[in-house]
Image (cartoon, rainbow, N blue to C red; front, side, top):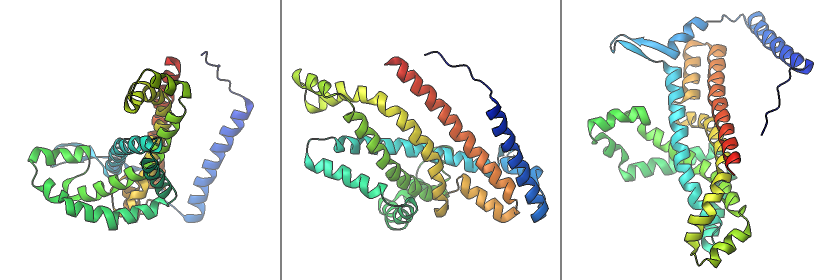
Length: 293
């Protein structure tokens, strides 16, 4: 498909001018009415700082929060996709019971406020589940190399329980939406494909594995990419259970330094950089899948 050339119109110039004017007005209002002193130079140490003990540059608190957000969103998508695939297949099954289980899960989770879900899972389910499974004892008794690996792929050992509780909650919440993506993808396959697979003598599972799911996959991937972007933004909710992701670190720094605007602007820009990058990658993936059809 040939791309249309991008034209810069007078309307674009007006929109950019209005945007610059709004930013200038915001800065003027902050300085004139609140007597606010900007301290951008102080913010640098919270992005990157030199650790004298380690003898090297290490991420600051804001950057650590950003990395935790990325790790939490990535793991959430892994488990939410697995859960969504299982429930999506249940939603399209022939049996009444699996369809009822899938629909109950989707309707229950999707129609409950995410903040309420966070507290329910954290205080009533995840906390007791982690204790019953002995997760803390298992991690503390695990080999040293495994404990050293945890901060890079999840969270430091003292904060792993909160991270796993947040991960469980987010996976269940996002899984409800992915379930509907999977259901829609499977049901979008033409009826003739099912009938042709059945005529070849394939079982139900063989039909799904060899005929339906490969075709549905290309239709599910674009909404999954969009769901990943949504997951990145949704991770801000878990700041209420003290998971030290980007929003939590931003709020903590605001309370400690009173650099309200610098911190919030930086946090917003980091979220935008993350989501816009994922959006661009999702767009490329969607175009590639469309060209391969």
